[in-house]
Length: 391
Length: 95
Image 1 (spheres, rainbow over the protein chains, first blue to last red):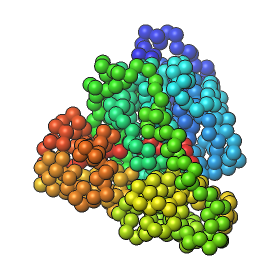
Image 2 (image 1 turned 180 degrees about the vertical axis):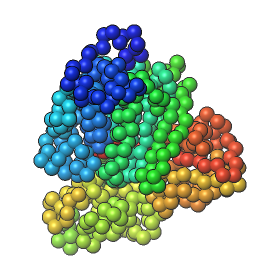
Image 3 (image 1 turned 45 degrees about the vertical axis):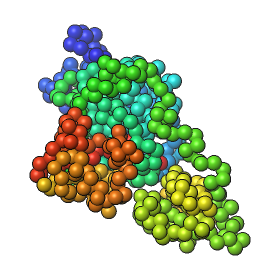
Image 4 (image 1 turned 180 degrees about the horizontal axis):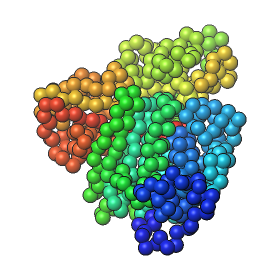
């Protein structure tokens, strides 16, 4: 057990008069009280990711008086982050997120000791970073890091406060192998790359991470002060469109490769590989890619090229390449009859991952003259036609 | 008997954007087959080439994981709700 025990309360830090004033609405509730606030002050919480989930999480935890907060983040602020990542403003675009986040959180509460970890979390550094914290909050955005966070928490016996979002749907739970199931008990293996779109491909409602990240902050505070019923062994599902919360029971998998008694994995592994990502996955090779400029040159030279757009209809509404044919990737298999294997197709999506999969699928069924537009419609906008808006 | 299957957002592209599909069946397996009969494009996402449910597909009958019941042989009754629970990884961090 890493969190504060009752017999350790004598060593808890005292609250200054200023802190007593600041946290008075906590202090007058018996469930928190002075003791709970002291536990918050003593607590060390690591946030992995300071994006959509990390924004409300970070601000609520800092405001609530968590004494030490570590931040793991290596990204920079982009304009498309701002519809949901409330830690950042327009003036922060282009800055390292961790720098802007530290500034903002310091404004929220200067009493918090903020520790930056401006690195990409990897198997080589995760245990070293995690070991100094009482609990870890998972606000990452990809499967390899989620499995890494889980496994590192299991190995170190730390709670992993989990939240995940997609479009209008969110999930939250507390995975803590000492007391219940871990993430791997629920999801033993990741889906193959490409099956589940990322938020960049599928979109996300801006307010959704605000709701799920706040649920995570609530669980963190409960774990620290030792009150209420933690979300251990339960998965909360939230559907923002239907405005429904559901709860599922989670069980420990007696065969879990990391947290069971018969664990077969006792150290961190290569999570990119575990999740099926190989360097070739990003691009099937030079012969499959074609640049936007090369495509335009072929068209200008009179070659008959059909531009196939495999994005979703709302993206097609935002912008399109003139004369392109839209068949969203999920429908491609069923709509092959609309295409002619003898034709020359240049397939594109937003940045390239979906069209790469589409080209792979098309070539498998005999569309030999099919190429992938490297960098997607974004590259088209940059290289060929600046009138195509970027998003 | 008729039961409803809750389709998660990532798979709704294969069910004509339906979040809920009603099917007939007396076991979890029959209900899932009924779902595939209606929406064949879902098949490769639920079942592997060996005809078994893929390991990353979580199916819950009401609030219980069928892996800890009788898996696909778990009996269902009128009015039960079957949910496919997806792995989603978004944290709102990526572009």
